Amino acid sequence: MPNTAPTPSHEIVIMGGGLAGLTLALQLRRRLPDADVLVLERRLHPVPAACHKVGESSVEIGALYFADVLGLREHLEKDQLKKFGFRFFFSEGQTDLSQVTELGASRPLPTASYQIDRGLFENFLGQECLRRGIRFIDGAMIRDVALAEDGELHTVQWQREGEALQTVRARWVIDACGRAGLIKRRLGLAQDNAHAAHAVWFRISEHINIDRWPVADETWRQRCVTPTRWLSTNHLVGAGYWVWLIPLASGSHSVGIVADPRFHSLDRMNTFDKAMDWLAQYQPALHADLEPKRSKLQDFAFFRRFSHDCRQVFSEHRWALAGEAGRFLDPFYSPGSDFIAIGNTYITELVARDRAGLRLRAHTQIYEQIFKSFYDSTLALYVDQYGLFGDPEVLPNKVIWDYTYYWSVLAQLFCQQRLADIDSMGHLRDALLACQKLNIAVQQLLQDWGRVSERRNPPVMLDQASVPWFVALNRTLLDDALDDSAFRARIREAERLLQRLAVQLAQRAAADHPTLDLAALRTLVPAPLWLDAGEPLLFPPSPMLAEAA
Image 1 (cartoon, one colour):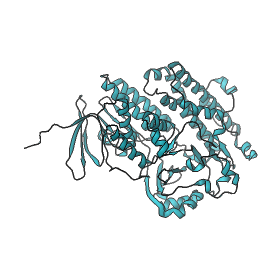
Image 2 (tube, helix red, strand yellow; image 1 turned 90 degrees about the vertical axis):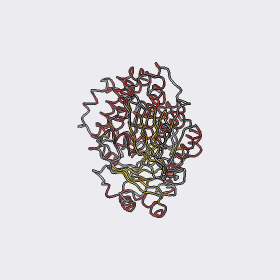
Image 3 (cartoon, helix red, strand yellow; image 1 turned 45 degrees about the vertical axis):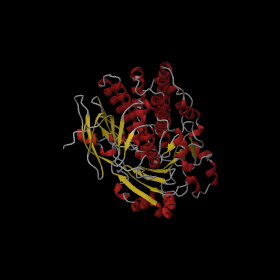
Image 4 (cartoon, rainbow, N blue to C red; image 1 turned 180 degrees about the vertical axis):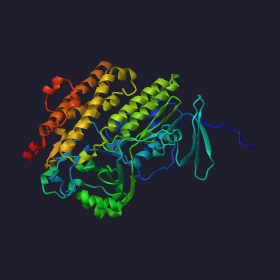
């Protein structure tokens, strides 16, 4: 007799149990304790530690999302590595890090972030889902998804190897399948952007301790207090590229090369041997450390063009895309977990509205617009900016600007739980738009400055921890919830801070290069600030640093 058993149904089916899918499941369960969530993951668990994935470094939004929104702080503190911030060395062609400009902090800043061993973390997340009553099935290959637009349930077909095809229905279907992007492909939502960078990466089963690299100036080792530099996300930078060094709790170290093909083609680095030859030429100090570790290679992978956009990630018809299934920016500044946190928060809000019997159309459209604006604003930090990575004068100023923009606007919206607060967004629309326009103008100024910069590279450390306003801004991410009035005042103060910083950047650049065109910035910043931008916000200019050194 034919099988007449009813097709099982769930409130939410998440296709993909990687970082985006598992964290979304936990957020949904935490917000909606009785939510019926099924997660289908292609890979068998447990996955290997230091598994074949990129995205180990977290920054403040992602770190606070994992720790506080999902309640995972104990795991992060006990089983992952606390990150010692971002650190940059302008070390192209150099074997001695004490003889080049270093940008970083001499001591940790107030808001913690973490180096995430993705294998350890995703295994923990899978177990945590089960502990919280979420059904998590590994080894499940998605065979088909049929989306309904008439209020009916969606249908997902999946299968484990050697087992019969399974069919489930769901009120909500979330595509968290990564770059496979099942819904994106089905609906033709894929969209290129203007950022064509590529990346290669690999892992070595031994930590790379740059603090022990040979240097001529032994005082260099004492410029940082405990913890030492190897716990940072270290960047070795040159024109058109950057190299990351990320330590992992499993004892491995992640190494990546990210480059603009206009400077360095992928064909020169798309195997481990080629990557090592490339490092020998451009970052010989790292090559010297890695050469005796060749036998400890764990994996190697590359993406020709990793950055991508998407026409739509949220739908009133109760489907959504999470993580890389939707949009992806660039690994520089590690925004991947940030945008997972933001996207998952919007998805959770939409599911909660649906449960409450509220209409979704207006909110899906507004969340889509806001999420896309965050993406576009952040993308501006990368497009045509890779030439600046070899500039010890301009890049530190860019980093100060980019951090300030991030901590004072986007991170405030997240940390103060205002991402989905449409009322606040409405009141602050003009201020947020002004900050966005100012960011685009400053990114153009930085490009123009980089074209005429002398690229002086004195052997000094630019210590972010010695800049009081910068440390204080980072500390605000830990503030208790503000009321509406105080929050709106904070964002408007952020606009004024960014205006002051933009003026000081422009004046710094024009002091050496008076022919730079500042007209666009002058239209965005009130005239009085061009006469007095207040106390200095930037590091001293390079000639002063060189003299002090």
